[in-house]
Each structure stands twice: as structure tokens, then as C-alpha cells.
Image 1 (cartoon, rainbow, N blue to C red):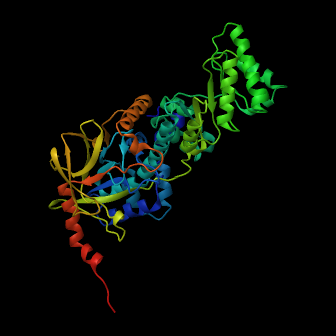
Image 2: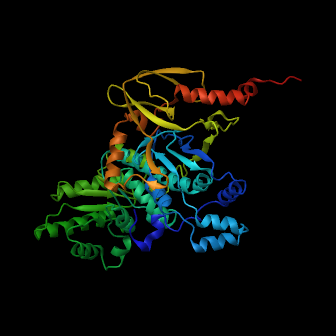
Image 3: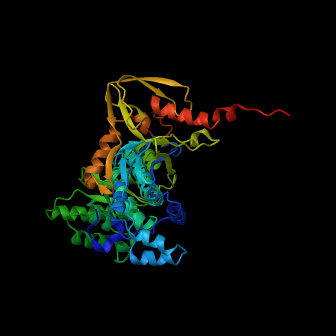
Length: 495
């Protein structure tokens, strides 16, 4: 949680108006017709993953919890809303408004899949409606970046990956939340100093071409940098000609430092050109100069496919600085997370609700659900099953149903399962403590390692199965039949 008052916005303070207008107009309508206190249940999930992406890595929960904890309309918020046409009695209601809700969530750093209720919230309808926009904003982008980072780190095959994207991020908040998500996804550090301060993220960086250009010659620039930072020297060698001057001059400076008794390993950064060829030549030149294990960092428009290609070409790069394509997730820049009403509480208890669409994939799964992850005998995830709240969890021979073809029954066999939907907020009170970023990164790494490579590969990954439990499937089928969905699907018109 943010402790620095100068960065209150990073701690989700004074952000009550960071919402879409229609959330406030619906809250006003619910209040006007005395529906705002009716208990309801919404779920956050995403319907699909981008092409060639086999999983998502959940991130952003701490930002959402900060928002819920700190939420209130301040005097200037209320004054502004009063000028937008809302009546005084509603403004008075907003002055006392808090997000006194209950929330269940999968832990940050958990691998999740389409159509799973990653977040479930219950409470007054008005509060849950107002929560929608910020919840989607807080979760979609960090989950996207954490997933991208996990893929980049997978391609890097254990080499350290540093997040270098602040200058290309979607604004200051994107730079912060993106850096945090990148660390969760596996990055070892970030160039973002404020992220380092706020989140405890390791920070790293070298120097720019302007450093070299500001001196009379390259060797003088390298010597000056080495003198300023004798214990953390990485030299950028492609300001001019990396093979003819940059790398040889860097080796000369490292050799001088070693002769002076400093324990120098030798570290350079390549930011342009043929990275495979340059890294191989740099490695050879360092070897010939007696540096057996040089650090060769690559940057410049890197992403997972290019890193994988460079690995296949035998590049001698052993550290990666990834910026634009990571922080913007450039090849799939938005995660289609949605927030849907799945149940309301009436006089007879909880009533499941369903959204019906002509596109079968957009039909929601009704009812208050939780995620159960089953494992095989090798302790690898087998499938996830969505159970209704209160429904007994099966073991041994497990009967489940296809989400889109409810008449298709599948039998799983497993004696081991894990509950993923855990209580995180009770009546607006946060139940879980902030987890250090280092621990979140470790959790994500362990979670990812449980899944076989076929779910993580960069092209054409295997599809992981998410099923409905017997009661969840029955609830969905009952509501579809009540809406004459099957009749409309099979009807034909003759003229």
C-alpha cells in the first residue's frame, strides 16, 4: 500500500470520480427507485484470450483493494456533481457513500483462463454498479502486462529481464501499474524509480547515447562512467560503430579497471543492429581479452517472439531490457475483461441471472460461483470447474459439463483440488495484507511452473478446459429454457 502522501493517486486516494458517467446515472436511478440497497452479485471475467495466448496471469488486486479501502466522495467531488444536475438529496446520500461490499478473488499471481470469475463481489446494487469502471480499469491492464511479461520471461529461458518501458507507457499511472505487473510476471527489475520506491521493485539502468556523445571520444566517456559507478558498470557500445569502436573501447576500459585491482566482469548493452551477430562478436572479443563470462544486455524493440528467435540463432545475450512492447503489450493492447450481474437476492433467496446473446460465447454463466482447480497425479492442473456457492465439491469421479454445450457431459478423475476464490473484503473491510512484490513474483513463478509447456508455448498453445459443475450447468440450462433460447436457436422460417 502506498504510504507517500505525495503519491496519493498511486494509492487510489481521491479517485471516486474516476468512473464513467453512466455508473453515476445508474446509481442515481437505483437510488431514485429504492433499488440501491438490493443485494446483488457481479463477477469479473474475460471471455477470450488474444491469438496465441494460452493463459492470463492475474494482477492488479492490490490497486483495487486500495480503492475500496480509500473510497469516498470529497467536498470538491460533491460540489462538482451538484453542478451536473443531480438533486441535493442524492448529493447528501453520496457524502455518506462507502463501498461496504464483500469480495472474493483469486490471489494475485495466479494463472487464470477465459470465463472464470476471477473476482466475485456481493453487496448493495448501487455500490456494485459504481465499482464497475474502476474495477475493470484496475485489473485489465495489469493482468495484460503481467501476462506479456510472463511470456517474455518464458522466451528468455531464465535470463534476467528488466522492464524499461516508462517513457512509452500509457501515462504516469500506466508506467507505475505496468512496472508492478511486469515484476509479478517475472521481470527482475524496472527502470522506473518511483515504482521501485512505492512497490519495493529492484531498479536498474545504464546510460544513454547522449552520455557518450557529450564527451570528446567514446573511451573518455566510458572511463568517466566507470569512475562514477565503479561497482555497477554497464556500457552502451553502439553510439557509433559497435564492432570497430564501441566494444573494443569498452573492453579497453574494463581491462584498465581489472589491472587496477577491481573485480570487473565486463558488461555492455546493445541497443541497435543485428543483435545476434553483434552479441556473438562481442562475446568472442571479451573471451579473447580474458573475460570469461561477460554480461551482454540487449534492448531495442524486444518482445517474446524476437527473443525466442535470437535464442534459436545462438545469440550470446544473457540479459534483456524490454520496453515498449512489454509496457504497452503492443500486439494485444487490451484485455477484454467484463463485469456482469449474475445473481440478485430476492424474497426467496439468491436468484441467478443470465445475459443471453445470439453469440453463444457471450452467454454468461448465471449464479454465484467459485473456481475449483483440479490436479492430476503429477500435480499438474487438470481442469478448472465453476461451482455454485454452497455446492459440494466432487472428488474421485467428477461429473462436469461443457460451458457452451450443456448437454455434453465430461468425466474427470482427480482426488486433489484447490479452491481459488478466496475472501478478500468483508463489508468494505480488507481481509488480506499487502504482499511484497518479491513474494508475488515468486508465487506467479511457482504457479506458472505447474503448467506444462504446451499451455505456455508462444504459438498455438493447448487450450485449458474450464467446465461447469452439475448445479451450475443446471442453473444455466433452466434459465435458457425459460427464455425459449433453444426454440429460437432451432426455429426456421419458410416462405
